Length: 187
Image (cartoon, rainbow, N blue to C red; front, side, top):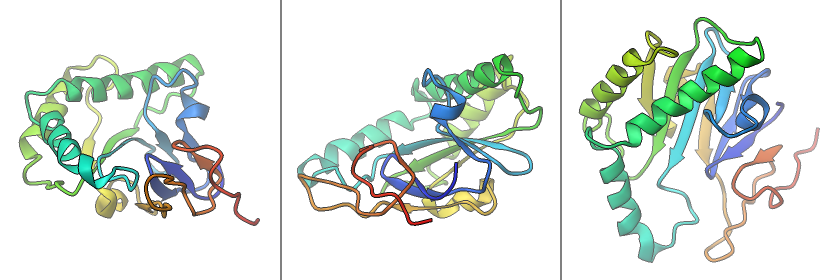
């Protein structure tokens, strides 16, 4: 993959050799990105602050973030399943790295690493119990902190035309949200 990509209305600049889930997990059973770094990073992206969310739905979306990120939520099991799905796909292809780190990017106006500390402990415990990904380091970040788990990676919100059209304006090589709304960047 070359150039910027859009995932969940976030525009990522990734190092050469990084792969989107369509290249790693064609059945969509794993994480959004395998980031080419040392060691590699498997990154799942969830965005509750997408510009396509209308103002009248913002309260519902904020409540959804709070509900899903509680320490007792089944959301964390779903995230471990994403990491395990990537493990399965890469193992089947003979491309399984032994040292991949796990990353979860949660973008929300309500994001607070301090408030998420109990949930991070739950996620770490569930990862530790996994026969497939147990023992791998895992981190939770927002857009501002993505470089802390994958050096050289940057992410910013996509520039989007106003609601209700919500068309991405930035040129990227791949867009998961609206595949035909971006122009390709000049080479």
